[in-house]
Image (cartoon, rainbow, N blue to C red):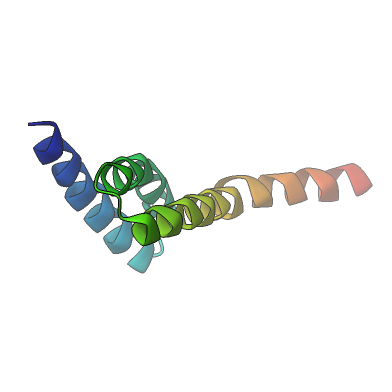
Amino acid sequence: MFNIIVQAAIFILGTLAIVLVAKKNKWGFVAGFFSQPFWIITSYKNQQWGVFLVSIIYTFSWAFGIYEWFYKDKKEAVKITNNS
C-alpha cells in the first residue's frame, strides 16, 4: 500500500509540476519540490542510486526555482526601496 501511495504522489506532483512550469506558473516549482521526498524514498528503497543522486540534485533545482520566483524579486525590491 505504501508503494502505491508513493507512486501516486510521484505521478500527481511530478505531472502537476511540469505542467505548471510549462505554463510559467511559479507553483510548479513548489509541486516539484514536494514530489522529491517521494522520489528519494522510492529510489533509496529500491537501491536505484543514480535516480537517488539525481533526486537530490532535482531537490536543489526546485528549491532554487522557488527562491527565484518567490523571494528574489521581493529581496531586490527591498534593496531598491532602501537605496532611494
